[in-house]
Image (tube, rainbow, N blue to C red; front, side, top):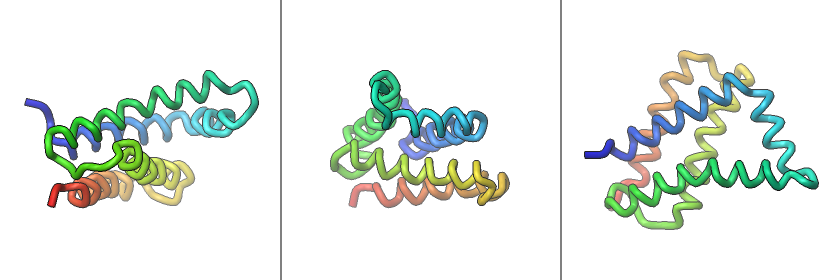
Length: 117
């Protein structure tokens, strides 16, 4: 039996945030560089890395765990929340203890908001 959607999403969030905090300058360079001419490989890599969150959303929809809708849009909203937490933590605006509490709370709120009605 597979893990519930909320747990899978929390694992993705924690992995992204850990990477962002450990490799902040690299992540910033990747995001900034993708808008430059000749950055096709960076753009492709970014698109490939976003396939997993989209698959996570689509799988949860197929299993009836979350509401229907465009998986790209739902994944983008989830990513915006997760990236926002990582960005705030990376800039020192969220202390580690607060981040540790904020991630599961954000995932719970997302999961509850996406629960079928």
